[in-house]
Image (cartoon, chains in turn red, orange):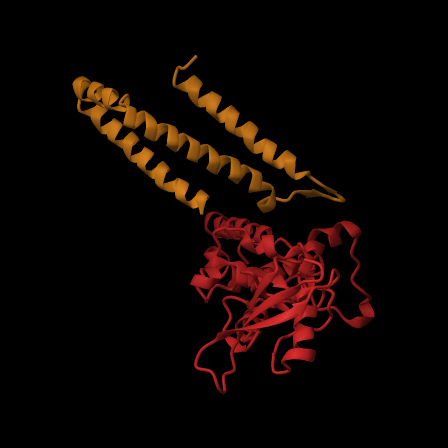
Length: 247
Length: 105
């Protein structure tokens, strides 16, 4: 592959001029250290300034550059040219409407994220004068893995359920709800259950596991969802078999 | 998808089992005809296939169980292999118990 050009096939779409997306090909030089994002930046700088795509940190922590690389959801800043064939197909992230070129409309995910209340909800009101929350390393360990989510939405692109049933709240949002449910400082699990322990929530998941396979931060959303399923089932039995425990 | 497809074979097996119960209720001759039909090559073939799929489902399920049942005790986490192993051991114990009840030994 050294010295040869990479053939980048990019799915373009301009809502102002195009009736449907179409492929465009670019010849990009191969570099050992380059990622697909470098190739896109090369195209934009030297070949075609009209190419639109999201990116920011170039180090797999911001979650902006998610797209389909040869059919797999990847962060373009983490997809190395040396691991890919000479012909690279780049498309916008699957299961999201295309806004322009490689930029997708992410409003659906944003709405779902807000619905699961991804913030600490205090168990009891606590004034600043009462001091800070204290948390042991063991308590941190319980939720830390799920806190690594960078909201890149690769899991939504990978999830076949989300592709078939758009109302599914999805792996990322539910994994984040779980992160707060597991946080020792949080008391909002009941509120979050209203959203995620529903048909559009965790019960739409059939444990395909594709979400965890593509997650660039090893969050393992599939595990989070199964844990929420078990917690919800226990809730249901407690509510119906031991109603005296209900507040 | 493979795990989901296994349920088709389990469902057919269940129907055969129910059918066997019906034949048993219809008397000795009906039941013995059922047993003969069970011994046919196509039936053996199906049952072997169903067994393979059932084992596949169980093995993949048990190996994934640690993801759904993480267990923490203070600072320590139970190793995933231990949780999966507990499922296999439970499987063996329950199978042995059922065989004892059925009079196999």
